[in-house]
Amino acid sequence: MSDTQPTPETGEEDDVKRKFREALERKQAQAKSRDSHEDRGSKVHNAHGPAGGKREFRRKSG
Image 1 (tube, rainbow, N blue to C red):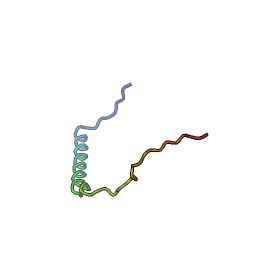
Image 2: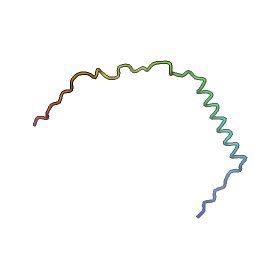
Image 3: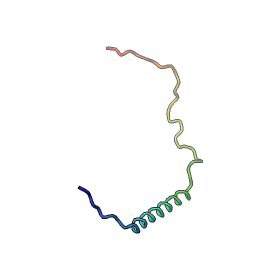
Image 4: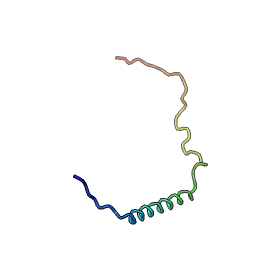
């Protein structure tokens, strides 16, 4: 029960790997050329109300 699948030639495999590597390098170069948003603050301010005060516990009636 051995699956015999035709393997691509070494030259074709290297060519595919090279194309993927080149595409990845182009993608990374594009990402580096854009502005980063690290220097800007968050748009979310005061997401929660004040968390102060004494907790109140009530018994369940009935």
